[in-house]
Length: 101
Image 1: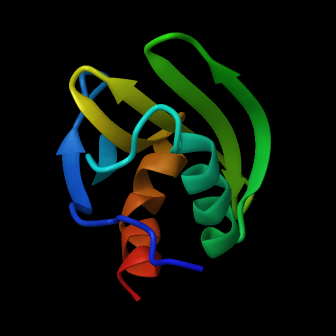
Image 2: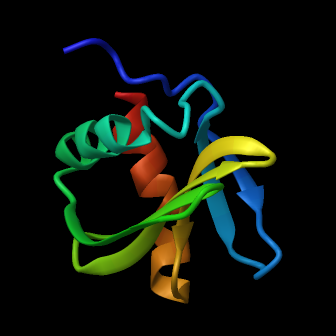
């Protein structure tokens, strides 16, 4: 399996006040599903929901019992992991550590 494009791995503050983890700007709308499946396998996460529109993909997933969103947006282009609660926000550094291994 080719390496996942995880060239950014940047923690940014979102409008909600929580941290979000910007993973990559190198995944297209068409390639997102394969990228997301590989990422879920890498994290050992469970996918709870998948949605898509013309401009966005949105997957809800569970990582160690905590719900997160995996979001592809085409403007600005990027894939992010976003927490859905304070507990998830506190786990963003752990996800970052896992992805840097």
